[in-house]
View 1 (cartoon, rainbow, N blue to C red):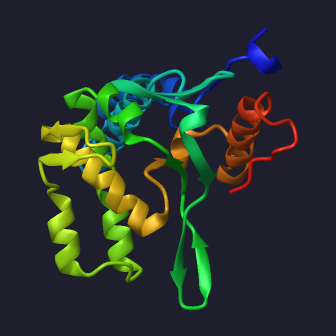
View 2: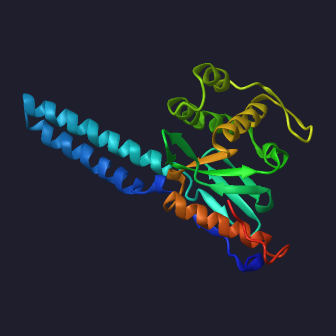
View 3: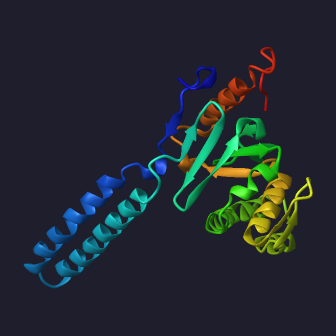
Amino acid sequence: MAKHGRETQHIAPMSRHNGMALTLAGLVLMPSVLVVGYWLDGRAQLVMVFLFLAAMIMALLGVLKLREPEFSFSLSSEHLHFHHKVGGWSLHWSNVVRVDQPRLSRGLDLVDLPYIGLKIRDYDEFLPLMTPRLAVHLLTEQRPLLSMALRYGAIERHELQDWLIEDSQYRSLNGQHYQGVTAMLGHRMGHLRDLYGYDLLIHESSLDREAGEFVTLLRSYVASSRAPDNAEREYSP
């Protein structure tokens, strides 16, 4: 049993769903289409070509799904672990300030985005864990968030152009100096906080349930981790 009665929970992402089924269906359809197409001619063969290409794309999509990690999150009594296909990162629950679903304004309405957001307390507990390869992938995957902010009018086009290529020198609030892609990630996290209020944003395809339900799950782990320090204190967004 994990500390504070919370067992480690592994989250299987929706992005892997139906990966094996798509792969097998594509692999079965491709030779079947070839066999049928051999006995046809003219326009019928052209149709078979399109069907073969569709089956090949189906198999490729299935393989790409299966390449994703079996688990996207591992939630223990002390840490949140995020598993990426090129590595992973970890946060102690004490370093999590806030968890919620980010929103952007559209007129008088607030629009829920297909992400969950994590606001963290200390970058210096997070950035040193980044490998260059993982940092590059995170920077690339976060670019749509900058474009989304432009589309909703949260930033100007010249800001978007500046932020797409971040500065390669970064100094944290504690005075720790970072260089290269780790520094770029530090700047990107600060810009995401300015735009959305969160340093790390994770797409809902990495979850196993609705974003709002997953936020509730994470908040329960944060609250459990804080319970021994103050039994009456509740976690709030």
